[in-house]
Image 1 (cartoon, one colour):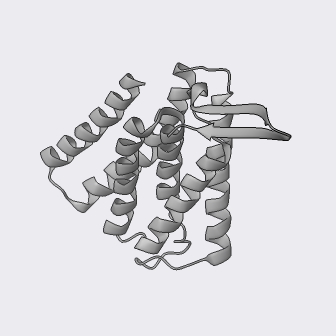
Image 2 (cartoon, rainbow, N blue to C red):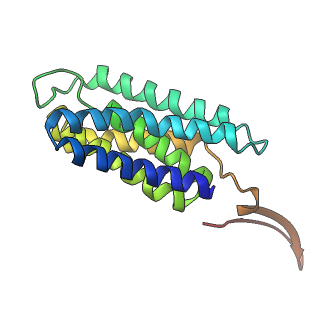
Length: 182
């Protein structure tokens, strides 16, 4: 898990240094957002193949990304909000929903040490879409909600010790206790 956290942080630094080296033109910002929109879900998928725990993590990820993609594209067609640059199908942002699906999956499975940098990268993806005039902040927010919501529907934490259920009896009452460690 420590290695995954380092990889996410190093990815952030690599992207930043690449942008600094090439200048911060609109095309470079767009490209970095495009790359990260794919890299975050790819990192989430890779984490399921590296850290196996019997919870069918790869299936959880597949359900997360398919749901995010499906909901995003159904909403795009149903709402058909115009893009700031004049195109169609702005709401919600597909790049943003993809990035936030990966970030939320990483956070749920591996904790906030991995989640915070992943969410920062996902936020950067959303910002790039606004910056290059493909979306506005409502589209960004919609994509983030779809992505995070999809991950929370299907993803369980990697550490099975975080969740505990116990049964007991006190006086004449039966008790069920559920606890979750954040």
